[in-house]
Amino acid sequence: MFTKYSHFRHEFQQQLKFWPGSDSIVGLPQGVQGDEMARISTNKEKILEIAERLFAKRGFDGVSLREITNEAGVDVALIKYHFGSKQGLFDELLDRRAEAINRERSDALDDVLARHDPAPVEEIVDAFTHTLLNKVVSEDPSWRSYFGLLAQVNNNPEWGGKTMSRNFDPLVRRFVEALSRALPHAKEEDLYWCYHFWSGALTLTFADTKRIDGLSGGLCQSSDFEAVHRRLVPFISAGFRALSQCEESSRDA
Image 1 (cartoon, helix red, strand yellow):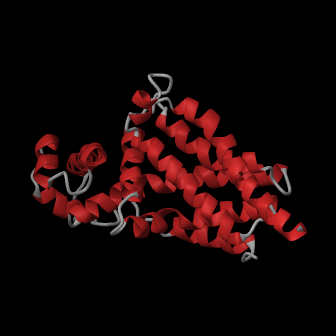
Image 2 (cartoon, one colour):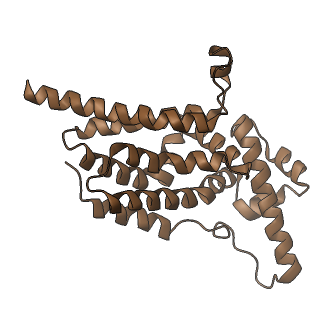
Image 3 (cartoon, one colour):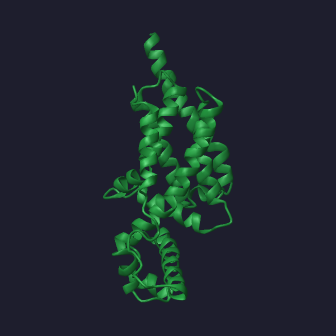
């Protein structure tokens, strides 16, 4: 049904090996040292932090470079120097955190697979999910901005699919492979459809639209990510199992 697990792991490792570094898009000029290098690095980080927050609130088209640089207190020419363009800035925002969360989720999956063969569906789903939700509730508020940004990208029909694929598909295939071993009767297409619905649930969660707050009369809050985690893992796991059981029942009929 699937290409060997080792193929997906190799694909994922190759992606990490060549991941863009913080200085890989535009190199620093020769001869820059000491305080000047520190200042350049600080300005770049300031641009990234402000752009991440603004893009997460209003999207790519809703934010101008002038707005970013005015808030950062730097010249707009620094955008071109560090990132090449507005699109280059946006791409680096996505890439710079993706490596970290991919490594953590890959390590979590490795731990599950080392303890179980095949692994329980719930533990596979949790290995994928808990790293993301733990980051959102961490003391670093910039992670919430980042995941809000991902929610917007995942909903963009023009270039969202390509961007998400570049950053996350090798890892997703590893998880789907693990799920195929946990649910041997599941059809490959059903596993990918389940992932599609799972990704949609995460996207809406990270968008934090507050809709469920009013809809539930205050019983639920879209910013309560701990409540999301407690419910999302059994919900998604049940969906994978239900489609697998449908396929198994059709074979027995």
